[in-house]
Length: 396
Picture 1 (cartoon, rainbow, N blue to C red):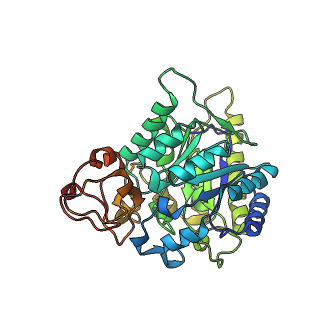
Picture 2: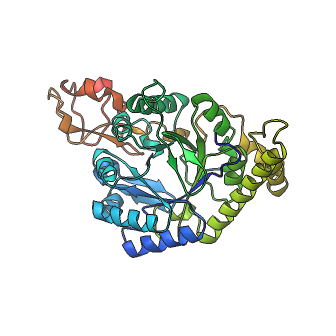
Picture 3: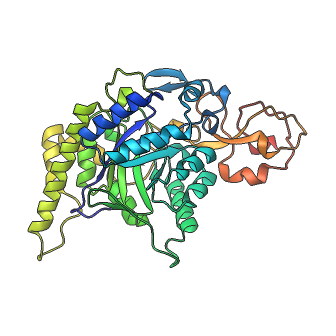
């Protein structure tokens, strides 16, 4: 958890809302900067790293979508992202991007970013985590649709690959134009639901996860309100606040219906600043007498006056990590598992090129978790496995 004197890093998640249009992307970067973002984030998309073509329709904020086809249309070469990075950094902001597989991760790393991010569905993609950790960059880990063991394993991979915590070398950090310094791992508490119900967010996980794992913890907020959850998270000591950003909620971007347009994003920034200023004031008043409180109860009381105690208490939750009701059905489907890229006939030896670690979504069946991949390669199929389907123990 951050110190009270350090404001959270404010991340504008543009994702793919630019639709591959550089002019629109630069307009969005400018608008995010004007709205008070410290960091602008994108998604490096190659459809074959995320979904099988047979995935079918996926329910998104804008309605049912053939997401594989949409991702194919959003694919852009590395030069596109290099130009985005240059534009973001020219404005004095931090460039951030999410890779979804080995190709996008390698191409992103070649741009020499200051940090990287792993999205919630890839938290169990152990091969990708090992690759990204190998770059030695501070990394944000989103933890939507995850259990405590998933978070522990992901952090363990980064600690092992980066030699952190074993006396081998200090954890790398990245300083922003603010005073916050993010460590080799910063966890983002999240609910994978669009929009996410604020009353299910269980924000007391922010200090609890920080204390448990010894890393900064922030918030990736998919709710619609610009103030409630970001302000509460800041009062609880969040190291970073991430929110989807759009020019207009009526735009056709995948996440635009749940994103904040510039005026609302500015409201969020102002609310975060007010809470953080109050926390800094509390720390100054308490100097020399007792440690400043890690939780800004004064700000929480103000939010209770504005939103009602029932909603605020529900959003705070009990601090016990569990799947939120809104995302529970997605566990095992939004996360990664092993899928057949082609039909594999009964008796056929399973080769590496036949397999890929993908999100399952709703139509296909989930397969084994990614760590089982080495155990599957070289085995024979016990039955015919249709193209796209997840590979299970009973299939080999």
